[in-house]
Amino acid sequence: MKSIIQNIENKYNELFSGKPLIVRSPGRVNLIGEHTDYNEGFVLPAAIDKAIIMAITPREDDQCRIYAADLDDHFECTLSSFERSEKGWPNYVMGVFDQILKRGLKINGFDCVFGGNIPIGAGLSSSAALEGSVSFALNQLYNLGLSKIDLVNIGQKTEHEFVGVKCGIMDQFINIYAEQKTVLKLDCRSLDYEYFPFGLENIKIVLCDTQTRRELATSEYNIRRQQCESGVDILRQHNQDIQSLRDVSLDFLETYKAELDEIVYRRCEYVIKENERVLAGCQDLKKGDIASFGKKMFASHFGLRDDYEVSSPELDVLVDIAAEIPGVLGARMMGAGFGGCTINLIEEEYLNDFTVLIRDMYKEKVNKDLKYYVCSIEAGTSEVVGKFVEV
Image 1 (cartoon, one colour):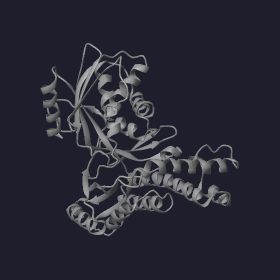
Image 2 (cartoon, one colour):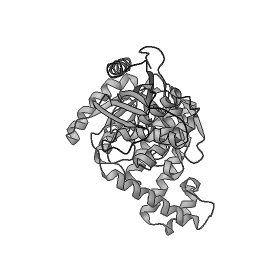
Image 3 (cartoon, helix red, strand yellow):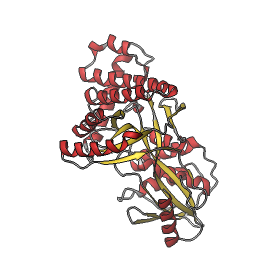
Image 4 (cartoon, one colour):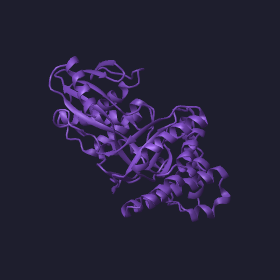
């Protein structure tokens, strides 16, 4: 990370003047709790050591000059005149200051350079990292007095109102609230949260990227939401207190199974069981029982594959391979599905063997190259203090 910080600061000095504020904003993983967020359930994310680094200084006018180092791409606009860009990435920056201006807060323009090592398109939420870096930086530069939850809401509203993605709140929340060597249990209904320890030096998080991206994910995501809502509508006829699947027990679901379409029943059953896995998994972490936690990760994948049906052949192959490799405690697909990454918990002494075996076996079975990323759990968005500080 030191070299990335240095490169970003060097590029800033090449393009602009002044001493910049340096901000680090991390990507994230979700250890367990998939497709539970929009059902007002529980998730268990953590921030990782893949991050965006931003160097930024305030201006006295309303001009915004932005350089995306990894893309070697410039963008300019003013606070008084800006609109969505076909380039895509500037929208995550403009959307943030659009939200700040809508709050009636006073800011001027800025010069900034950003880049990092979050793999784009791998489901590690580089978008929330960019939003977090901009909102955090402007809050610091202009003494806006925004709280952590304000920054979270600005990021989510950026997605909803400027980017055009009706995302949940998990990505923005963990980006701001994460703490080192912990995972965060988030109640997606109340936004209550609790930290659980995950700082074991002998356990590594490894992300295995299928190198596949499916457009199907967006349309099928919406269908899954509709199916869950359909189940809730039927179950609510028997209990008016039910607002989401968060309020439904397995016993209650089973009682009225005959009234539900078979597919809708399986979707609901998965979500209810996944919420239970998150809560039980947190207790495993409290006890330091990583083996039991890992088994719940496998169970999560099987539910996503068989009942929620959002996996893919490549994801299934990776989990099946991982299950046969010594030292693997848990593995599952991560994210919306139909491509992207699996997340794996590996005992460190087996790490080298794991990466070689899973790469070779994946190539043999699906004839695709595998990228993998070894991650550690880090803190949320923050200022980088001192010159080229290791973070």
